View 1: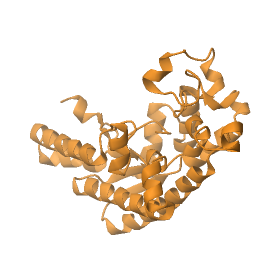
View 2: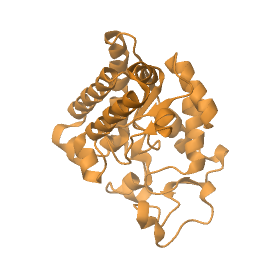
View 3: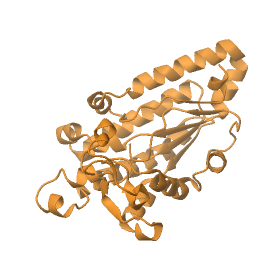
View 4: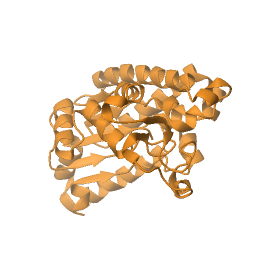
Length: 274
C-alpha cells in the first residue's frame, strides 16, 4: 500500500488510444488501464479514507504518453484515412481525460506523438528510394504532426469545459526531430539504424542475435523503434527541462500548477517513441 501512495504506472508498452493498436501488439488497452486506475482509487480510499484519496488524485500529476503507436497502425490509417483517423484518435483521447477527471484527476500532462516516421523500422518498410536511402517516412511524420495539432487544440478547449482541471500538452515531436536531424553535436554517429541486432526491424527478444553494437552511445536508437538512454535523456531535457527525476517533477509542478509533491500517479507513462 505504501507504494500506491507515492506513484503508480499503469502504462503498457505498445499501447495506443485506439484499442486495435493495443490488441495488435498484445498490450493492455487504455480502457483496461483506466479500470486499473479505478481499482487503485478504490484501494487508497479504503486504506486512507475518501478525503485523503480525493486529495491525492486531485493534486497528483497524471502523465499520459500515447499516440505514436497509433500513427504506426497501418490498418486503421488505411481504413479511415489520416484526417478521419486523427479525428477519431483525438476523440478517444478526450474520452480518456474526461474519465480520469471523473475519477478525481485534475492535473493531467499529455505528451503528443513523436516523429515515428524517422525510427529505423519505418525507414526500411517503405518502397523504392525510401528503403535504399533510409529516409524518414514523411507520411507518418505528417500524420503525427496533424494529430498533435488537433490534440493540442482540443486540450485547450477541454480545459474550459472541466472546472478545476489543468490539462497541459507537451510537445515531444519537435525536440525529437531536431535531435534526429542534427545528431553530431550530441555525439551520435548513427540515426538510421538501431544498436541491437541488424538495427533495422528488431526489438525486444530479437535483439539477442546477433548481438549489439560496440558503442551504444553513438547510436541514437537502441532498437528499431526506441531511442537509447542517452537520446531519451536529451529529449527529456528539451521537452520537460530536465531528465533527472527531481527536476522533472519540479517542471511538471510548474506547468500543471498546485500538485502534491509527495504523491505522483502516472497512468500511463511510456518511453518517448513508444
